[in-house]
Length: 301
Image 1 (cartoon, rainbow, N blue to C red):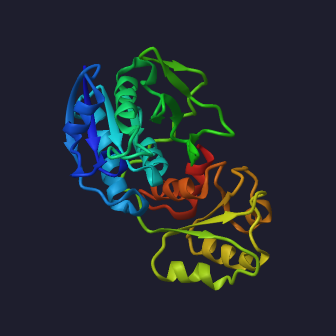
Image 2 (cartoon, rainbow, N blue to C red):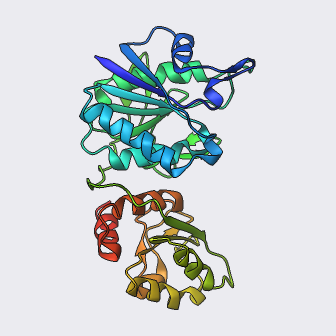
Image 3 (cartoon, rainbow, N blue to C red):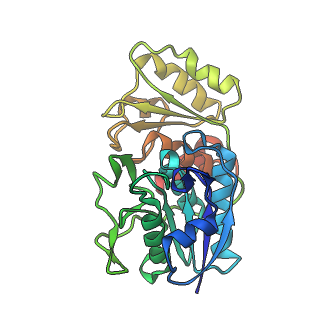
């Protein structure tokens, strides 16, 4: 069995004398459970990760399992946008035969008690465990396993209101819930130009037209807890839908209801967060198709 470790730097690799390489991180994590091939990837800080970097990491994960015959992949990533990149990798992975595990650290190597080496060791163990085959991408931190679709950055990582997928116990994966349904497979390159707009009372409808005038091929609106958006946006939502530019509405509370906006042509995010919905819309528009493609994709998530 051979695992691929993709190291992107960030907090897990920060030390007083610079940034540790993937090979150095591997040495700090202790003897791995299987043979590990290391690849270092130049990436922006996690708080400013570009879409192109996220796409590149997701594609590398997919290729590693589908073409390069690795048995599992571990990606070290900064925690700020780790959940987003992990979810994109989950969307693009298809019927992956091996484990896909993302991990990171809240304390750098230069701290008195760095958590990165232990998290990496656990992630490698998880990726080698057959229990995660077919489960899609997961996040492994503090011996906890969270499905990429459910994970949220809070005080650490949490899957709430969904159950945690499992944990590492005595060097083995112990699943405590059923993994979420795998997303549909869509070929082609994801559409990178999708806008995300947080709604607020008295928000001018012109903001939506501004992002599409600048080239956005789709828009995600973050509505209130019940999925509602200001009534001032209804006319513009209808207009964009008629222009074949899909408008997705996500709820701040992750509900599936989107209120009256659905009557205007908006599409519900099916419980995804606004940031997840943006990534999902990118994938949905991989082969063009506009509103109809978005309806099919989000309807099958």
